Figure 1: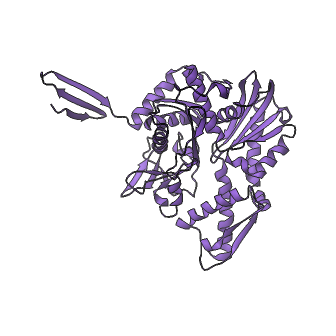
Figure 2: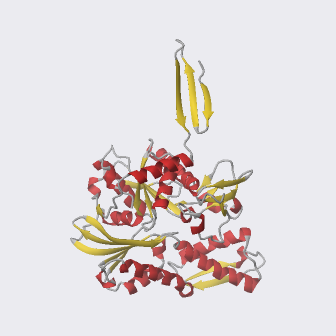
Figure 3: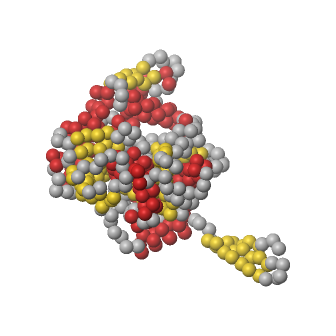
Length: 456
């Protein structure tokens, strides 16, 4: 007979009678944000909290050719995500963007009935800004009062009611205004990643290592974990981004017997610093620090303010609505250009077709207007060193990762600060964190030691 289905609150009951008139029933709890959050919080509150300060550095030769391991590492960045999986004889960056790109912009649009993610959203930002959400990493796990509103955001951050401190993101949907919690937005990104990885690997993937900033507090960790479970991941490990990046660097290199290293990770939305002692193939954390409200986006904003003023003052062009997001994209491109060239230009014709002029900016001018940002980095460095017994001269090696480290001003600033250290900028700084996460996923799965990857 056809089963009868009934719903009571968050529980779905299924009633069925077979051909022998034997009655049976089953039930399932609907997986909502509230249910998942309650369960994950309970998990964190009841487990023994041991802060992991020593990590093994796995060796690459031990991590490949294991068909029983389905390792996946996700760098869930504020501006872009990167995903690495293990294949038969290698680790590989997965093209998770629908346009085939391996770097996946952390942008979501609700202009259609089903959410759209990635580069397509960035390409259409000028047209559908009011339906777009980005920078979720600066909202996840925070109370409403803790959030620093960026005027560039096309969405609203609201407080649904006085009794709930959690923020909600209000955005225009295809036919109505939508309100979403940051965990729900993260879950959409992580669900897209899960589906793309399963398509790439040809099998179901349930276990994942997701990286988080070293400075994330317990609430931010829980919110990230909740989002991953909402996306369908069954087993979730959270690993600090500096740990992942350092593992990626050392996994196929000789490891010195004893030295002190500073990992400097300037991503799109966060700055992470971690000082390690490296001894006997192990990383021992001396301290970690960072700023979860500072990253490459702040350098974009500096350029945005610079060019907005010039367009208004010299050309009477007001930057607002669609024009605002066109300028933001141009500023990101100019920032990237100035990492390799001495000069870049903004085409005024992009904002008024009647004007055939360009506004130039040199690398030196860019660095001058970024002095306040460098001072902010300097203060985070000072705080980091003050938490240890180290002086700047005690650091033997500086490892730079994150897309922001491509800027020459960052490299020059660190060389001036740590004059006695060897400075190394990762070959592919945007990919290091995801690579390290995948290596560590393979390592803990091979050892069958799920406790090895403690939440930091």
